[in-house]
Image (cartoon, rainbow, N blue to C red):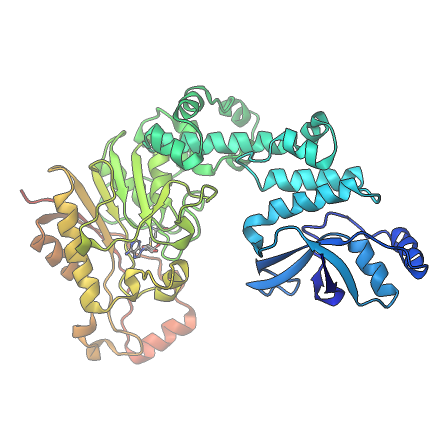
Amino acid sequence: MKSIKIKDLTWDPAIYPRTAKSQQTINAYAEALSINAKFPPIKIQRVFNYTNANGNKSMEATIILDGNHRCVAFQENGIKEIPAIEWKDTPLDYEENKTALLLESAQCNTIHGDRLTPNDKKQVARDIASKDPECAYTETVLAEKLGVSQQTVNAWITDIRARQRTNRNSIILKLSLLGWPQEKIAEKIGLSRNRISEIVGNTSFGNIDTLLAQGREMEYIAAHYQMDLALTWAIKLQRKTDQEKFKALGWGLRTWDQWYFNNCDEQFGDDWPGRIPAQLIAHTLYYFTKPGDLVLDPMAGGGVVPDTCLVFERKCQAFDLAAQYKKDKQDKRPEIEYHHWEPQKEIWPVTKKPDLIFFDPPYYTKKKKEYEQKANKDIPSISSYTKKDYIKFFKDYFTLAHKNTKPTTTLAFLNADWRDFESTPAAEEKPDNAITIFDYHRLLSETGWKTIFRIECPLSSERLTGNQVQKMQDKRILGTIGRTLLIAKKNI
Ligand SMILES: C[S@@+](CC[C@H](N)C(=O)[O-])C[C@H]1O[C@@H](n2cnc3c(N)ncnc32)[C@H](O)[C@@H]1O
């Protein structure tokens, strides 16, 4: 036990579960103090990685687990220090131990005189359950810690657990439809392979058609079953032909080699720098793959390729180096695996040989800042490379892909001309700084690939403001809205 300055303590409302301080208790304690009554020590915990009330991150703090009323009463009586014991004698990572701290605090508060109200306890149980989709804290544990019956805990959290189960099952189903082997899903989700097999075999999402017949929107149905829109569409359109799917999605099927789409269909893929329309991917799948084929997306960004594969019943393995895809069972896009491609090291993390590689890399330094923000500082996106390294990356990548794919694999490579046109009239541009589609075509040829289609997928010119256009016109600057999909086959 030690004596600690009250002003150095933090009352954290997220941990100390009392909805409101009781002035009555404080007054009673203050009165007892004035006649020299002795109080048991308060319980505290030193933490790091703490965000304080002003939003300052990475702080150290000493938080109160038990004894908040005593602290206030001491202060009101002009006493600056209070006896305290530490729960754990070494500082804890706050973020990692939040639930354990909350539960310890709740348990202390159920034991001593000034008890938590049933509503406080309910709130604690619900907070813990929602942060614990793995159900590490069972109903029995929660009941014991909060001093209530298991039935009570069950009634408090049953809706949260049901939602988590459906959500977990929908993730399992999605990974299974994308072709993940059950062992790999089991490892990702943290369940046994047998359990995964049962869930894949038995999960039913009721009758989506009934909800549709009732006039429910896809968003409503997705929310109802706790699954994302892509999976909802996939289930609705299962076993329909590709053409029927285009029709149901309202995407006109282009039968020529210019694919212009006004907008991204927001239902597929996340908002991501350089996001591409699902329609563009669907066209690539339509012309160059068949249902059941395996698609590799090496730089998946916001996940529009796996989403489209799901709807069009193609398997998909997707990677990206964005920090959010690092190993974490809870991420929003479990189908995207974290991988930093360094093709000169010849590491090929793909488990089966793909039928199609849909490759949408950063277009040289375009959106460099945005991709830097997504990545870890020490693991750079190729958009931070010099021109020489960027070109070498593709030469090595195309070589590696050639070595690790089937004779029939198709490579779909999306990119745009990068020209040094900023503030430069077209006639004065320095061609040495540019990287154009001709360069990628040359690299493909040098590494054993033959370009068989060049499909133009222009961006909308609407993204340029009136002012920008005026400036460009005045200075005779020629902008780029072109974007090209090169389709290559192996030259064997
Ligand atoms: C053009 S974006 C992909 C956008 C995606 N198709 C979409 O529509 O959301 C390119 C992606 O490449 C990733 N990337 C860049 N360099 C990488 C590397 N060396 N290894 C893995 N991913 C990389 C970036 O993080 C970025 O998400």
